[in-house]
Image (cartoon, rainbow, N blue to C red; front, side, top):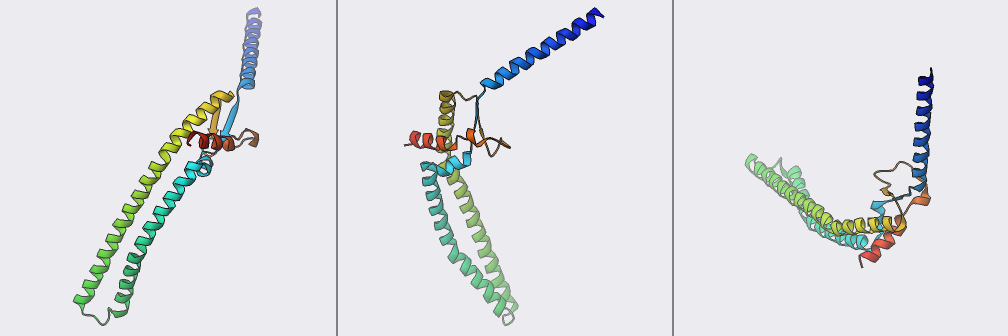
Length: 175
């Protein structure tokens, strides 16, 4: 009976110690959150990158508009005149339409790849600087953890949102 009481007291003591040490650890832990996507979109470097990206996208879209119009014109011609054409002429126009369609698809696929590479190239220096800025901010301000609200957090108190401060620090670091 004594052994059972001693074991129970020991378990209660260990549990109390764990509870006290956990609550004191939690009291000293400071956590912040930020919206990485918003930081990238709102920082000066992100805005400049977006402008360059949008300009290139518009150039490519303008370039393809004429080819798409030409393809549409050929399609309409085939629909309207195919009944009057010989089988040979009809087959030739259909092959021409298919060839131009494949060429346009290859060009648009290449353009998509170019835009993806451009996006990666534009974001890389921003993300590297952001990582340094966040780590420095965390250390200087005593945060144990800073999380991205879009990927890691379900719910949080807006008082711990550091997004605006991180945007300012990133702008300063990237000048």
